Length: 311
Image 1 (tube, one colour):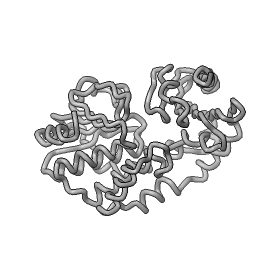
Image 2 (image 1 turned 135 degrees about the vertical axis):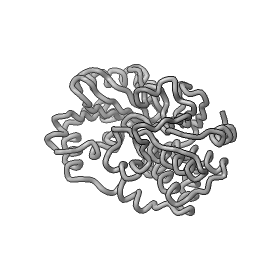
Image 3 (image 1 turned 90 degrees about the horizontal axis):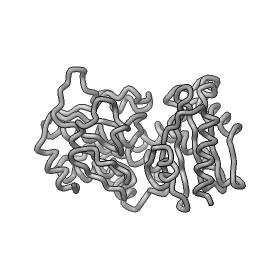
């Protein structure tokens, strides 16, 4: 399905429920809110599924659009969701549309629009909304700017392209409150977050003469630092900041004996290939998976998987 087909088919439907992925980030949230706003502007009924894992920093953007408990949708749209195991339980086999930029999208929806060359799902949503003739209001522009800026690390990651900057410029021209987004999401950190970062770097595991760096974040560390879920956004980027790094991984303990793994690489290595060894996936230079093991063991398993691709 291309952008034109997606726009046409969406315009024919009504009573939408928009679904975000587990542990939602700025891209899935911004894409969902923008699509919801645009559909409402067309006179359609639209809500966002009330994902219980939305953190405090993103809640003000999405909470006003949450569906009430007895809402019955006739069209379910997933945004920025690569696989059916990444959205909430109860939607398996029920997703009508998927709009995504992950090359590993499994085609779980009835209609799928994937543009893997785009830096963020928000870029694709912008194209769809324009094709539908929806006005890009300041509200829509702001959340789409959030989508694009968060998935590119404030335009610092290698997935940033000239088209990304062109989209951001278009959104700013449409009234996006980029100063608010940049300050709230990129230039503000709690004291607890900074204390957690210090603990992470103190216990960093380094391999291959410092070219591979693995960070471990345990529940005990989070408790000692006094962090909340909101403080843990974008921990995956931390070990990659070290000079000379080529592959970095962050092992975060979610529950006892269960960890979330985030892998980041340069152009020489495929992060998604590393994560696929554990049933995960993602992009070439940014991917993730989950491992059922204590954090120390999970870190060893990831280190071994990295050694295999390093050879």
